[in-house]
Length: 161
Image (cartoon, rainbow, N blue to C red):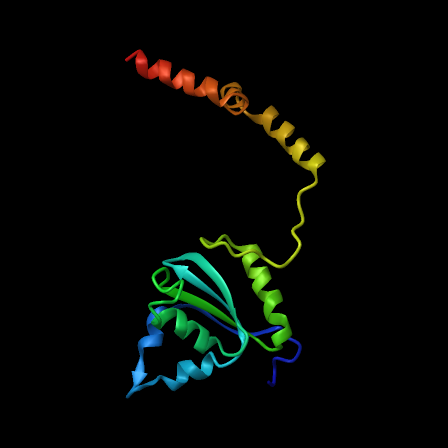
């Protein structure tokens, strides 16, 4: 495709309504939507504006998304109303792009990225905790150190009314 040489993701559709899969010309799906989503790629299903599920289409995005939208037996049928889609030029990159999206955003499903996670080093976590503890007012430190003390204090305040 001219102008897209070397790009992993060639095009994207952002926050399209699920209803595009119900638009038909006669008894056929609208050819413009079908054409725009005719490549393999990765998609995000949204419940309103919250990411719900990240998935992939090894062949055609349109076919996979239409199945989610129109098949009541589909696992995600009842849980989304918008989608974003990313066309991927080389099928071998589909899993990688999917993994990046799964790792980058919280979803309500149990999708797990196929990319190794980098954890914050323990010494940095300890340093940040100590730094935060120094900057907090005394009552906030107490709340963090002992949630039971906080609950006890709240219970005593409400009992004194």
